[in-house]
Amino acid sequence: MSLIEDETIPETTPVPDTTTETNKEEYPEILEIKAVETPTINETKVAAASQI
Image (cartoon, rainbow, N blue to C red; front, side, top):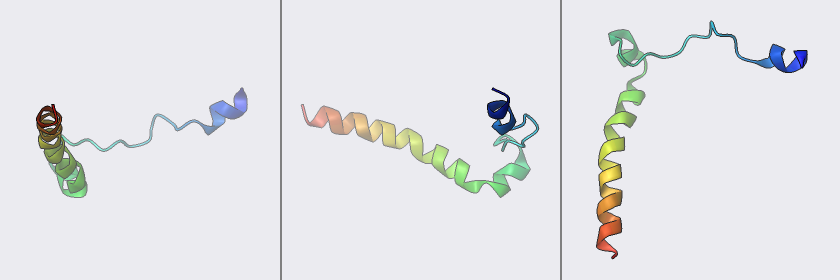
């Protein structure tokens, strides 16, 4: 079991925080993905309804 524990990612690994201004500049693709998610969900519902 000790081998598996050694392979786990340490808790100190930095995680991108999309709420800070600096990370908005460093990870613009995250904001772009979030902006695309909502309309695509709505389009999927419309497409499913039109096939009925």
